[in-house]
Length: 117
Image (cartoon, rainbow, N blue to C red; front, side, top):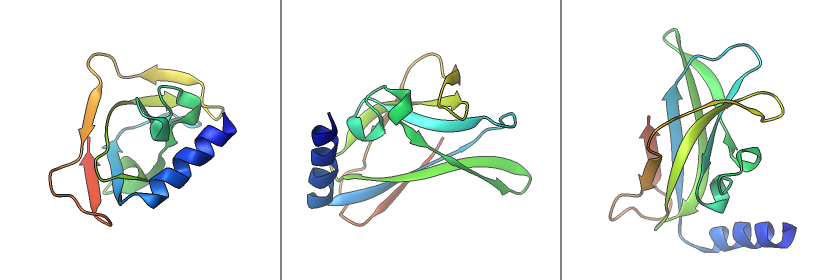
């Protein structure tokens, strides 16, 4: 399993990469965190313990969670947001349809794609 993960990281670095930035306003309780978990290995392959943990910041009195990952230029996946505790145990998650990430046509290596959910 470790070799597979290292291979995925190496493969991603060798491909033309685009940075995807997740950004979502969401209030949490003290000790809770927000993370993104998705269908592809780089976002945990639906294993929340391996998802992308977001970082909080305050913007005009609103709590915003954000995080970035490099992905191949042809990247696509489904994803959801999860509220987790310090050990990444799921406290709440989105219900309903999964969100879809499909990079825009013509996006080039080195570009930043921002998702404002």
